[in-house]
Length: 181
Image (cartoon, rainbow, N blue to C red; front, side, top):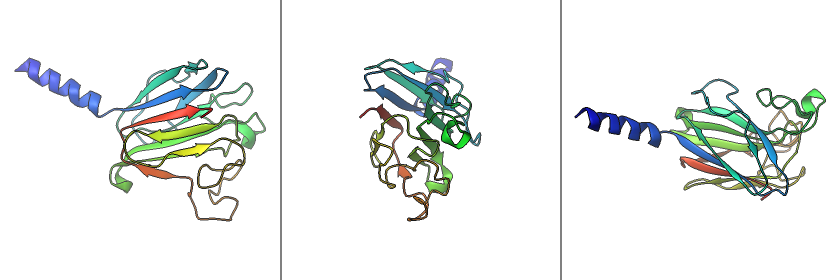
């Protein structure tokens, strides 16, 4: 009976986690920073600075309720510090993805987006595993409904559109982020 309980507990723990596969299609390595900012959900405690060689992938397993960022970490960007850096701080640009898993505000679903607010440094695409919209940003000028623009802290595409039009809601437990899609 104890063995059944332990198996069930492990099974529940594994199924409640989320996997974000970081796939690097770029012809160069991509250094990432995984941040728990804004520190309002379950903490990710794994490798916070994976380097992903060209053509390779890294499986990032985050806990249920994780709320955080995954950002590109180019040299001199400052983005190794909770993904704060980039053009807002007079440093090199750093693109990021932002996540809120299992949000009670949206029926237990996941909110996700591509953010270039701190600058564009690498093309990115978020692909939901089952449910949700794929978003893609391949240049600094990608459409506002695909990513937040550099320096646009209002989230309104420079005042030209509704707030948070780059944000998506999905019911998937797993996602793939592709660099250089």
